[in-house]
Image (cartoon, rainbow over the protein chains, first blue to last red):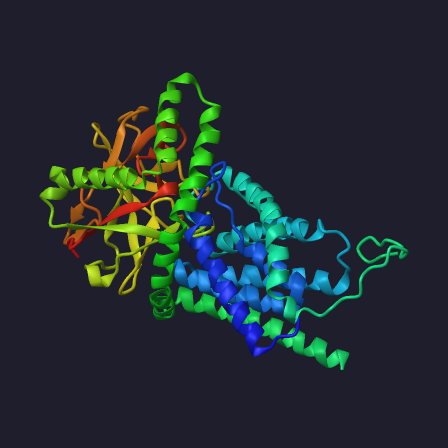
Length: 183
Length: 282
């Protein structure tokens, strides 16, 4: 991704809008008693579009903003989301994305990883209260919601950041298909 | 060139990780308040606008969710479902708000609150934390409305939580389903006391700890705040605010105590209007 001041401003505005959308809409609706979480999916999408650095920096910034707005423990969300963004970016740098299923699948897997990450960090910091089994269901459902939300998010962000994306050569039909970059 | 790029990338990543740990350290040193207050103050007007703008969309999703859940239930609920549909289709958002405000007003008139030094202020939830590990909501009341740290927060149905951070125009409420929450409560009519703690991940379940087994608690009994006062110290919560209803009570033989589960009266997953009890004893 080519980051110009204009693109940076656009990214900042989009990130703020996504955080507000999460806190004022997605966190406050429940589907099957679980609220969707689009923040890991958003960070994954930026990692996929911009690479590991864009993913990590976006994850850190989005996490910092969320922790400030919900008065959570500063650093928890930043740490988890920067990891998620970095991994998504590494995937983008090492493998080619041949299928349109890859972004939503990565959104799902890395949202699950983020939920596990939150749990690990919180447990490391210490939780006195008992933990319900429903936490597992909540994690699984958040992952499934991320799959469906990852799709529009990926294509929406591609459209919004089109000017900044490095053009990739179209994959020709004659070329041998690869699995995760391995011939 | 490539190596330089890799080195730079590693440096940025290390900086970000160190930054996260630094924030965690600051947070645990209780020095993060001013950072969070500053950011919250800047963003609270935007949150209010987003809350208003997204309310119809939230109501629509809630309607689908409630309809989906109700389909699997028996005919006893069909009347309620019909009623919910009628309300949703008519889009009478005002009716819903009105009923919540009425409930809050009824709780205001409750002799417990009416005779206490608390001054209730009504506010609206404008944002909610995205993770089950940190259960909090942001409301549109701040220090300008008389809200201070640790003020109790109630919904029309019962206790919702306490104020955990205050900015001029908004505040954060730590819900009773947050892992750090602990409220002293007593079971009516027995009067046995304990500490109400959450069950992380399940907002419909709270646990009453430290309860003596000499008096048996039974399903259906009500738990209210105990509002203790001793040696110049007083509970943050006034006595008698409904917390929840006992759903399960079992004796733990080895620990000579009872394991009591309760369902909170307040609908913590769908809070919309709340009341902050300001001006309480400090």
